Length: 265
Image 1 (cartoon, rainbow, N blue to C red):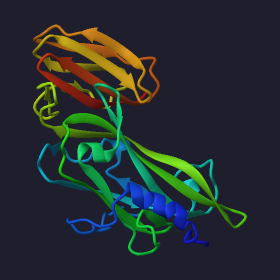
Image 2 (image 1 turned 90 degrees about the vertical axis):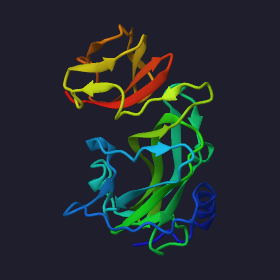
Image 3 (image 1 turned 180 degrees about the vertical axis):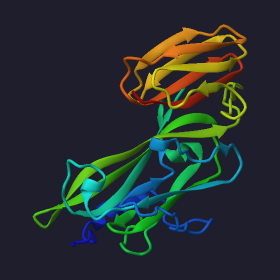
Image 4 (image 1 turned 120 degrees about the horizontal axis):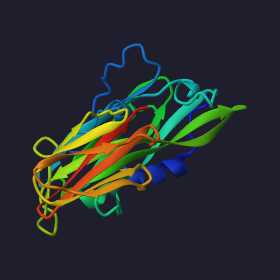
């Protein structure tokens, strides 16, 4: 199989987006994927998330990926040999302002380890497990939707052709105080969201202050919005929504809180 050593120009672009060295040292590609042909950890599709980060506190968490040899293991529509996967960028969307940020703006970066299989450390060759660490010292509190953007290179008549792919559904929670002095609430200590996943009715509990609850889909469209009656539990009906990932935001005068909701019909 043709490896993508020839795309050095593209590799230089990737290296400008992701660090290749780190004071933490390289992560270890040692996650147990069992008998799976491909996989990612943490896997947002089953509710896994990156660890909570704290402003001015050094942070590190690791993303593991097992790259299959055939693209159909990821998407049945692409029944083609897979050459490699290139991690090209990480997108953050503030769940309150909906502003898009780079990792560097919140004090973090991604450091790739491809075991030396390609000159670009963020190029992962098919058939192996690799890792990338999310690390740094967070400088900007917030709750962010995080997407890992990759290019998957499938082999068509001996030529590697790029296909975009995204690891989506991640919530990166950086706890601290925002610039307006409003606390960014931790999921552990604040709002209750249950059942999650849900197949219809779900509840937002522990609503102690006046404010607003807004539910958005992955595209940012508002699915439900209502005012909070302090001291109660809010019940919301998701019937008619498409199965997938949604974001429940609670905003009061003293704190903001966002959590991920999985709807399965």
